[in-house]
Length: 387
Image 1 (cartoon, rainbow, N blue to C red):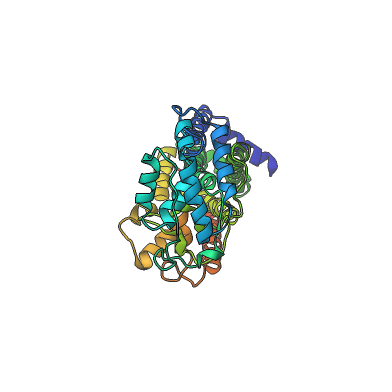
Image 2: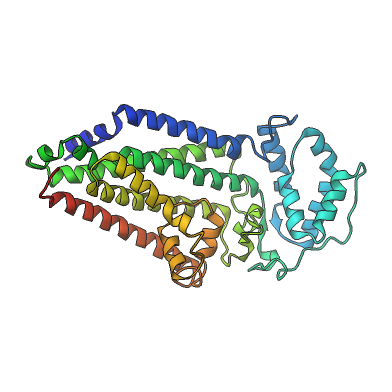
């Protein structure tokens, strides 16, 4: 059996087009890492006098100085120290993302304070700084239960993982989409299906080869991203409350409404699991479409369309049972905050509670993966007419 699997692995990976696709994917992921990791608001831009890991260190030290549960005293210290340090930060070209976001979101009249602070040549002092109310910000928890920390690098990590996941999926669809349809296109199907193991063991070997290739690609890419993140940013802020990922509080999403106490590390673990289960779902879809089509181009185009279709349709179907089904079918994770919020309640997904909905999504996708894989095997095994 393993000899058949090795044979199928070589068929997938040893094609010239496969090598080109892998190189393009690597270059695409490297390109995505530039705005996500190396040229962003934390690491500084090319025209800044202080940039790179030195800018990262300064931002990390600033965030760690104020790590703690959110109180009036903490936000007052953040506001006044921001006013004290803004001149030095401007001179160095450093954007204090942590302080700016905290003030902007939690301090009343923040626009006026930030504008005066930025424009003043003197160090300003602000008295009686108070947090906005829990109700005003629609927070599920009182602020003293939410831990503020070095959230900004984690936002970029989630962004990088989600964007690279799309590249990984497209690469896998390209590499594996011809697992069955390629034999039909090359007129090899009739010969292979008449051999002793053509309809059984060879079909299983193809399914297993697709699983191995896809899993290795995802795990290598995810591990490389985490390794770069650890080396460049470190894991400072891992215990920050997910509600304190302040980049996820805007006109479209309010992570403060998320009613469960998770840390950013908890979210990272769940994101990786969700992506891998989504990958298995796509593997099953690749196998099924390839078993039904007659050439690799049709397999690739059909699978790519079905991969992106749910997220596109959610812009049209914005509520009801249709949106819940599309949420289940959408394997992209670009809007991580919105996924967390959707899984937190029955009104936006099928069950009550984040844990129940998460288990439903994971187990449901695993069932679909198993069903698609079996259906692909059944179709190939029982083909009577081979073209």
